[in-house]
Amino acid sequence: ILNVEQSPQSLHVQEGDSTNFTCSFPSSNFYALHWYRWETAKSPEALFVMTLNGDEKKKGRISATLNTKEGYSYLYIKGSQPEDSATYLCAFMDDYKLSFGAGTTVTVRA
Amino acid sequence: SAVISQKPSRDICQRGTSLTIQCQVDSQVTMMFWYRQQPGQSLTLIATANQGSEATYESGFVIDKFPISRPNLTFSTLTVSNMSPEDSSIYLCSVRDRTKNIQYFGAGTRLSVL
Image (cartoon, rainbow over all chains, first blue to last red; front, top):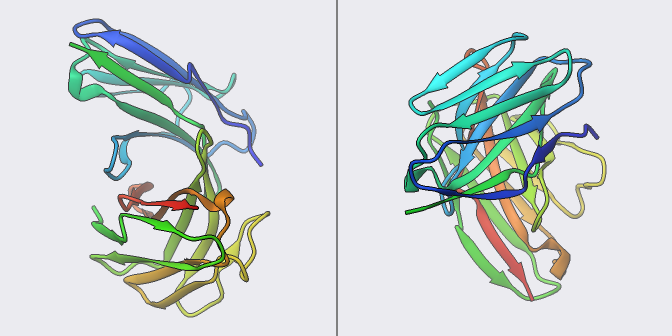
């Protein structure tokens, strides 16, 4: 069982503020790191698939960085909006299997 | 992208009964995955279902408890057998686009066992 840790477990953000949270994962046998957004009663939606050390990816106001040597990834939300409220999951891929963290639940207050 | 229809979306079941969850994909896929998320826990892989062969179960999951069918390349079912309150979870099916290395999920089945 691979240990994928996400912190914090939850956070509350004021609308317009920026925030970030972390995912730590094993630094060996790395193949890819996935980020998903999961809104209540909906399917988890893929945000980023990151494979290279130093990778930075961006989708609108959301961006992510990757450090495979030390085994962590950050996800940033700039200028949070109520529609950003969701649980954000990271998942470590080695070979074919994804191992998920427990998620960071973000609540954006208007 | 793949569109996955999963049903039921939620159910409340009695202890000792069984529930079958269905997963329909809008395209043909070789591998389908079944996950479970218990309250406060991570998404955990139950098994990988390949068409035409037995499902491969992860450590801690057995076929007698979670039988899986995979009759064709677009459909799979997961049965949760002889349920207990510990089986109360969200169950999700998933497929992978190997060219993009992206995984797609159904909306999940929220199961409560009384």
